[in-house]
Length: 145
Image (cartoon, rainbow, N blue to C red):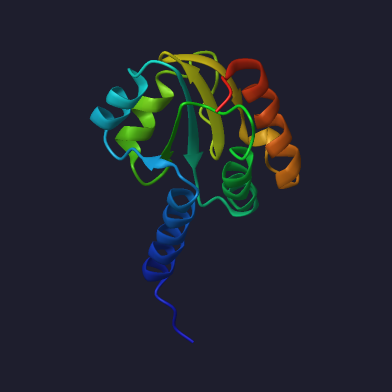
């Protein structure tokens, strides 16, 4: 059986993009889109999307479920590590004090990093523990919807 690896990966990437968009996140695909989104006032949850095996399969469902909470960020956005490289690099430039990590989540307020949920806090954990961690941050930093 001869499977075209590029076609396979393109399908995986497409599914990962669609999954996070369906959850209500806006894709930021250029550095300019990142800059515009991060300059908005209020809280922003950034999901750094990735096709990295188990961690990506935990992070995307956690991203979808965490936002069903009394308090949540004003804005939900995503950049795709390994795909939209310049946008991801621009987003990461805001995450001072945190090494590059994907998948991961960053919570910002008025363009300033508040906290992150890094890959090591996602990989090997179940989606509900990631949801709980995110919702605890929403409780601390976000306004009621």
